[in-house]
Structure formats: structure tokens, C-alpha cells
Length: 150
Length: 210
Image (cartoon, rainbow over all chains, first blue to last red; front, side, top):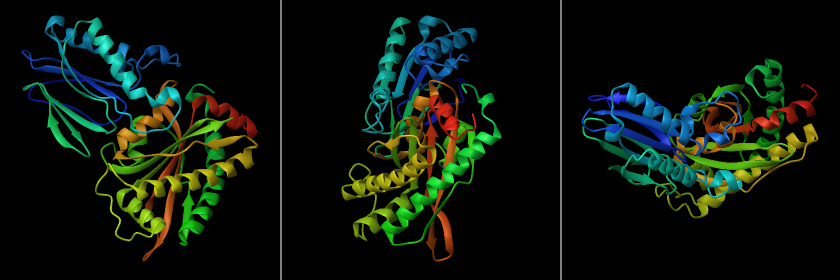
């Protein structure tokens, strides 16, 4: 979980069932990225909770971080990518973890009334994503389809 | 056995020992299948962070062939075979007899996919039956699943179960070495056994080191 200001970019590589959530303010040219691994912090079975990896706590923590940087909540927009189903077999709970992460992220963003400007989710390919706060462009690279900008 | 503080060097040594026993059986099976000398060894058993796990498998963005399966029974966990594209191609050529096979279209491996899944079946079956004999625990693998993609995307899927408990994982890493022109080379690949945290106690108590 990190934030970047123009001219710096922010990236995460090798997203599979995880979802990369970019929250940005295009006028202030600042962006934060959350790497969501699990849909809900209720799934956490440890006493020491790593807030960054759950959709609900991760998005909440990033919003607080952006606010502390002087970003006004109503100017925040989102772009999301990831949530693939990498394998066909597994236990029932984990096999759909990608789609479940995407659903959970959308639910959280809706709760905070943050519009999703672009998304590249689902499928069965891993993604490397990079966001440029200067242009608000998210580039998504997959092994098969090359790089596309959303 | 919930936190890392409960896992000592002795526990990791015991896992290394059972890893070596499983690896020896798996190497024998693979040698017979390929008609070629194969060695396997467990260089280390460690408690690592997720980022370190990706590095062990070649780095998040490296494109590899990943064979994934779940372990079920009295012990649950995840098993991964991570092969470089070159090694995977070589295995497929040997197993199918199609010397011209190449992995260029990731979407459609055809017979190649079956060959790699069979490799997963044989390795996991022989490895886990050795483990099962040694611990007297009932352990069996699921059907293997295959993906050719980035290490991060493949390996993170296997960390989902663990990530509900912790940000670290016990990894039993196994190197697959094959005989080449310059002796044994370790290029063939790796496989990883990641027991689910709730199985740590079962494993250690079956071995009398709880």
C-alpha cells in the first residue's frame, strides 16, 4: 500500500487473483494503490491484522492516507485491475477468490461513492499494472495480450 | 503453533528431513518416466514472507509454467511445481515424443498441458505417499491445474489459504536437477510445499516434535 505524486508512477507486478485498486485525484496528481488479496477482513484469523491485504480495511486505510495528504474525498476516483481466476481446480472457497475480490472492491468503492473510471478485471491471466498520476493512465500488461492503457 | 515464535529451527530441520524423503521418491519416479537421471534435494526449509516466496520462484514478473495442486486429508496445504519455459518445453517433448513442440501460444498447450499435468500427478503422488508413510497421516493430492503466467500471479493463488492466518509461510523448497552435458544442472525447476498453518500442529505432533 503506497502513494505516489507526479512525476513518480506507482506499480505492482504479477497480480493474479489479487486486485490492484488505484485511488487518485487527477487535479492534485496524486495516487494511492492498494493490493487486495482477500475480500473481507472477517476472513482474517490472526490477531495481528494486516489491514492492507483486505478489500474493506485496505480501501479504508488508503482513503485516510490520501486525506492526510490534503486530498478531498469527493475528488477521488478509482481504476481497478486484476481478479483473475488462475487455476481451474482448488477448494471451492479459493477457486473463485479473484471474482470475489473484484465484487468486494466494487462494494467498498460504492460505499464511499467513489466512481470507477476504468477496469480490467477477471479472465485467467496475470497482470502487471502501472499508474501515472500525471496523466491518470493505468497501463496493464499481460503475458498474452501485451500492454493496454485504460 | 499459531505464531511464528512457536516454530523453531528443530521444526524446520524435521520438515527438511521429510522433504528429502519425499523428494527421493519423486526423483525415482521421474527418472523412470523420463529414462534419465534426475536428482532432487531440499536446499532449505524456511519461514518466509510472501515477497521472499515470489523471489524463490524466480521473481513476480518472470513467466513460468506453474502446476498447482491442493493437498487434502489429515494435512492440508498447497503444492507447486514451477518450471522455466525451457524446462517445461523439454519435459513436454520427452513425454509426448513431439520433438518440435514449443510453448508459443500460451492459451493452447494441447497435449503439452496433459503432459505437464501428468508430471504433476507423478511427482506429487510419489512425494506425498512417502510423506504419508513416514508420518502415518492420510495425505493425498487433488487433480493438478496448470497455468503459464507470471510467478506473482501463480504463486499468490497458493498463498490465499495461508494469508488468512499470517503474512509468512513455511516453504519446503525442492530443486529438481537433471543430467546434462556438463553433469547435473539445477535448471529443471523447483517445487514448493506450503502446509496450511492449521496443519503445522498435526505434522509436528505426528513426528513427535510438538
